[in-house]
Length: 255
Ligand code: 6PG
Image (tube, rainbow, N blue to C red):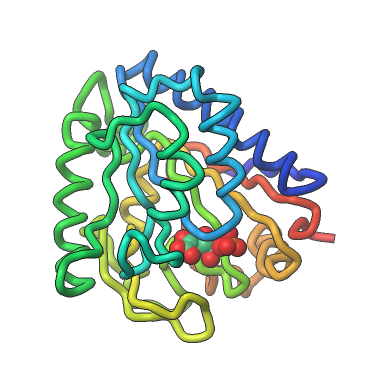
């Protein structure tokens, strides 16, 4: 399925439109399957989208039927400013009526990233288990079990997405949904990460990339134009059977 691309004047317009898209998917998922499951992106770009979900869409989304997961996490404490969970807690969790039982952070308080990834693998399988079997949760074409209704992703200037970095062996994982990866070089924060895998992301019913920043312009252009260099970028490898939407602000949109 060819990706949809929507361009926006600035991050604020992108964020409002993204919150609208997410809210629509949430309502459709609850109507169709009684639940909405979402894997959140980290980094800075999604913050305003999450703030919009907590304010303008606070009473539109059925939070009691929503399961919140994380597409990746830095292996730092949840009160560390580098934590994706901390960003989500500030922008969304602390501002909307979301029960802690519906939020599934990566357990970065365990001894090692590998242990955190192993436990998160179990969490993903447990939370999504009845979701994938309920009401024909499988892929309409292949019948393969879907994972989340929606995965939100960002893109780094090197083409990484989640914490799948160029050349990483994690890109070859087609069994597990969660892996520990070493601290990236040349990408901040350079700390060990826990990331969902392409197997997980490709099984999402929908993927939305939220992209802003001049520093993404080159990789975004190469990915969307499918240049010969594009497959080197992990973001270009995300190929779910379902919908893929790129929401890009003008600073990152190809010239
Ligand atoms: C992370 C994110 C990462 C992020 C991109 C873009 O944990 O850092 O998952 O993949 O989405 O690096 O980050 P910005 O939105 O801050 O540009």
